[in-house]
Length: 133
Ligand code: MN
Image (tube, rainbow, N blue to C red; front, side):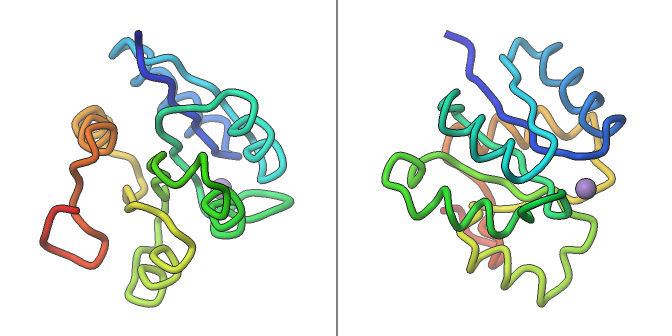
């Protein structure tokens, strides 16, 4: 069974790029364009991994992730922030919101498949730095 990945991204070009790369690798993809859409699609589709842009309309990525992670069924589903600003303060917010990690924007399409594979395997670099979680 191919793994299903929910891509939450309001920028159409960025979203289509990620979708294209992941489809080429054989993943099933589901797309959401804002925070409300993200929550609906996450609940309806039960993805194996969620890639979440932080700056999205209606409900931001931090809040969407907090809400999903407050539900039992999303505790073990990795949610990964897609963010251009992973500065120190942002890393703390990413951790507090319940994200498993982040992928820096602009997305490196050559690295993305390995990053996704690592998160799906539950083996990723802690956002706190260094050790595997
Ligand atoms: Mn955005």
